Length: 299
Image (tube, rainbow, N blue to C red; front, side, top):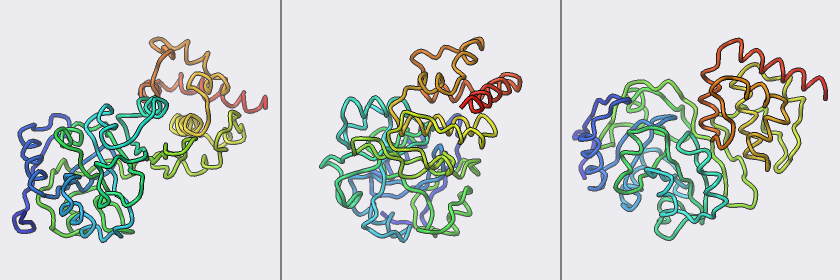
């Protein structure tokens, strides 16, 4: 497919995307095109994973070493087994976090070529972003940050094009993205989940032991608000063997949360839990943080 001077730009509303334009973008990728598109984290470069020439173009645009794998974006969680080998335990974990800003590393299936990933694993994403999942509705697509390797990740499509050049066939432009954090990468290919990259998790939480069921209450001293608390809970769920309710119990905040009208902690996903905590008022947040400090002093 021709590129550069023939590049198209689709302006799109991220809340109400134009499905006809998404279909045209799919057609461009079906013909071997490379696109620049928004996700729930950063702008990404996309192509049909089954077109090796298009995949190679992405490596060239990013100036990325071919030995470094690219990740795959699928339209929904149910599509993950099409490109990766999954167990029931792995799918239980995945279902708790996706759709969302996470990439899960899994053993790849033979349908995924060595051009996408030269090793036996592949990263898979299901963003919480209608445009991105719509683009993968016919075939899985490549997802990788739209930047030159080892250079800054930018949030505005025009700035991105200045960095990577115009060697893409289509830009889906929703304007500047508010978030510049990449996805959190979690390796599920081993016996215990392993955090590879913390896109949304604070670095100081990285010292949590791999399979520890205990909570280091020294960490609580550094928590300044709900975002830090969610980071802590997220790390504990991924690193350890505790459920969300068990962690809230150990933190001493389960009872407080269950007293808040509209909160039912039974069978709740972490994604839903994050949304609930994001909607709390200042008084409710203060009560939670005070309870954490009391629990920390008790230890």
